[in-house]
Length: 395
Image (cartoon, rainbow, N blue to C red; front, side):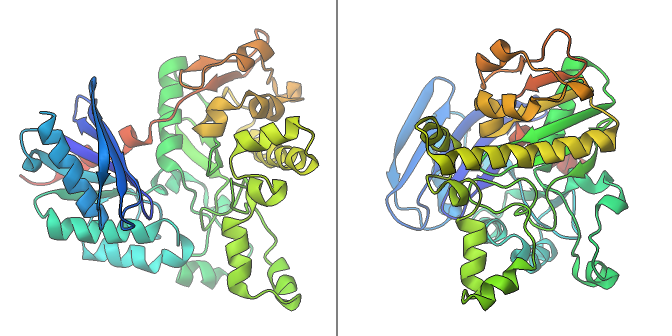
């Protein structure tokens, strides 16, 4: 079965084409500036690569273009050869796991837009467009919250009136489920059966997950993908009672929410960039705010690692993934510093020379906890979920 796994932004489309159940990647591709004109696109299949520009009015047009290129490259015989599109969907509220997209799923995702305003709208628009233009292709939404359904209820609730959770769904959901599930499964393959592990997905978006025997038992995200560890330009944990204080100071709510979601995090503190590499470069030049941003980011990570060591009664392994987790030896060293009490000791040379594109173990010889750099593979998890769901459907 050929399954295309889609990762969507408001104006972008990235994908991998899988042959399931062999899990072989047949092609990868991407388009940008969708709906804006002059979209750049590229497709790679084996050693062959094509690239160009095109006018792509919507995501369905991007999919059609890429499927056409895959026919030209002889990856598929025809557009009809692709049987399903799997989506790494973000917020389905009460819907979790992998589900076939229908009107009910789309309606629920629409109700969740206030909780995932940057993520749900492009997926909803693309799913609707695909249903219209590619009716032969099954669509499956694999929600990021699914892996976290095993979190105990005491770690799901906020200290709010209980009816807010029951009537309005205000609770801790957890996200990055595909990434943390992959890290959990991959650690078990590399190390053997494990009891406790901590997965740090650090990138443009960041979260930390406590995993007990393969099950998520805590995640730093909350009701939305804004909270927890702060992000490249998103606020992370924040005292909600500061909002009326800011409004009393003359800021309107839209300005405040824009600042929290677009101008916060690394960008907000450093004033330099939302890209950690640029913030690190500024810090090396002596920029005080850049140094503060890095220190605050590290403290945010260490806060959750420490909390999850308590949740798990220690960790057999810690894994760093995501763009920052895989490529910043500075952040990895700082996060692991002074954790000898928990049996966590980093080998500085292994850490410094670790290639973030490869699976690398970086703990010291006398560390009781294994420390890994692991590239994640969210698309593979979604491909597996999509295939398993469709195999359960009656012929």
